[in-house]
Length: 324
Ligand code: DGY
Image (cartoon, rainbow, N blue to C red; front, side):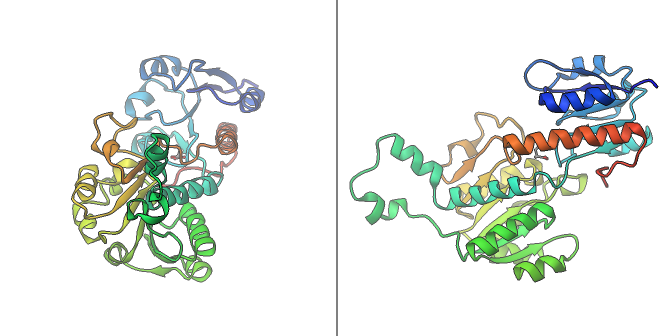
């Protein structure tokens, strides 16, 4: 029986590649990073499967791959899939939920702590030799805000939201509100979470965590009027996708003191542009989109994406087909 041809758009762990080689005829982008668009379009002309991480899958790409049946992304987010175009050509989209939930939740807590206790800012101060005698214990200049027992608002109470809630409520004794498309009775029971509307969540929370996936409906989901509702002492944390926030409105809110600070793993344009004002703000912690980036979790994601692809190409029912 002929084995399906697969193209892999970025280097993957050897064990994952060995698994794919058992089932498919694979070609892989061997250089660092992800295959550039031009090279990708040339490479996929007779492939049936694509294993990718963030490459845009749109009508143009699909037009270059008439035999394509399945695209599997090594990510839970699939905003780089044009689902209408994929549906119209009967190409299945697959992603990697579950395996990264705890890792991303850990990072969200790190962003909350880092922003509110000013970890990055004060680390830079110490390393610059600016720690003056007495200042760390006596002077307000190094004071931060407590995370423990503060009020947390989670927008987007999916699996990752749940993992954040567990840490925040059981570990830090936080009071939790959440806003989601539908109510989550199990989160209410487990964490004493209070379901509320977006406005109440923004008005009441000391930490606002945005975890909503990026879809055409959630572009600039959080805008100027939302920052205006937040407390001047509040921190805004985003580990979903940069485009879920109107970045200009967020910058204005931070500059004008409408909110106290932010912890950001994601940006409107990535890599973030060097002249982005956010990079100059001491009250903003910035990271290069590393929510799921631990060695173990990225391995698990790559393996799950490979298994998803093999299942889809074998005609068995893959579990992690993207829903919307
Ligand atoms: C995801 O899986 O969507 C993370 O953002 C890493 O890409």
